Length: 161
Image (cartoon, rainbow, N blue to C red; front, side, top):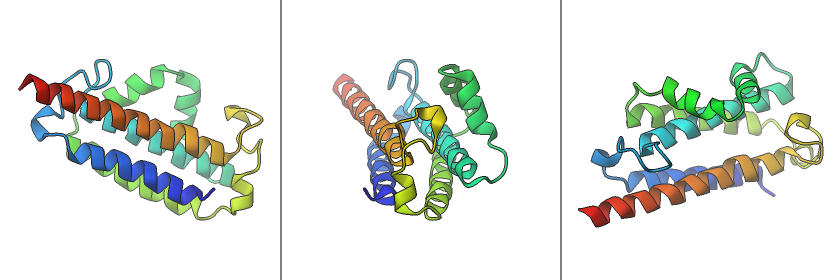
């Protein structure tokens, strides 16, 4: 597997989907439960922050406050992080998403591919999983899932007009 490519493909997919959403729909609830398209982008940005902390932790660098919140809060993390970004515009949350994604790719480049395939390097995720698994499930698949939700929402809103 080529982890940087997998990460980029997921990111490009979600950005392409977001570009197709009319600006006047960005804050409309209902794209994913009560979340708007902007909220989904904020949620994905928070997950990029988690990834930066995961990679930093595995490298043995610095504190990982976002990852700590993610592990401590469980599912409450999602709504808390979206709420923390509620006052930002779509452009603001996209700026964070893109900048943090770039930081994650920079950190990812410091790993050897063999290490990324090694199970047990992120024991909290599951002893049989490797970082490659995390990239596919928690990032690529996650972004594809939300991109599909955004597409469906856009289509529903278009049909109402």
